[in-house]
Amino acid sequence: MVPLPPLRGGGKAVTVAALENVEVDYASGRVLGPVSLGVEAGECVALVGPSGCGKSTALRLLAGLEGPTRGRVTRAAGRGETAVVFQAPTLAPWLSARANVALPLELSGVGKGEALSRADAALARVGLAGAEAKRPAQLSGGMAMRVSLARAMVTEPRLLLLDEPFAALDEITRRTLADDVLSLWSASKPAIVFVTHNVEEAVYMASRVVVMTKGPGRIGAEFPVAGPIPRPEQFRTTPAFRATAEAVSEALAQGIAA
Image (cartoon, rainbow, N blue to C red):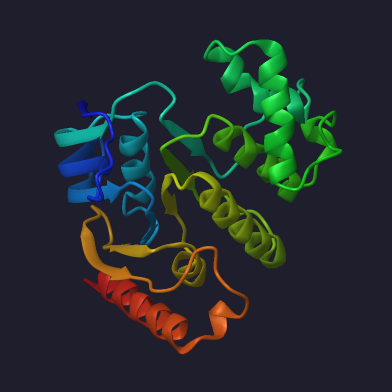
């Protein structure tokens, strides 16, 4: 993995992470690629595609959790620049919500008092003020995912990676958490890449939707999504939203059939 130079401003688009002609082979054969994808500072990118097309593999490459068989992965240099939220909250069951959120700060050398204070503030931002002392077994699925989001955002990452974090939740909770993520984004504007099977969720949350073909996955199409983030009320009912969702669905169907 090759580090990118430190991020700089200057009004130009800054690449936070990139896949350059990457391919990933497992014992069963190729699962991804070749794929080239750049992620710019502050943009929200959704990856959609059929099961087994390598979406989660691409996310693990961007996270540095896996290396490509061929090609190159580049990421912004610096410790604590990337945070990952998985489908399961992956909270330590013996720790309180506060302690779970404070953990990455403490592991990076932040003093315990400051880490706990920042954890409380992060939990408040996701609507969990008053739940700081609860343990994971005392939390609903939506609350546990909020704790996981707070833990990811407490380090103020430049790159936030979400691997189907809402898949196990009901539709109302999914929509509420989607708005929570976009509100959190508006505060510090990290680059976000998230994997989802839900086309409307992808179009609602992303400024760009990337459609992957069936495995071994490649990029079949990309769609920019117009509109402010966080989304205004009734955004899902606008003609632009409906048209983009239909276009993504059509591209996804073509990618599955290809």
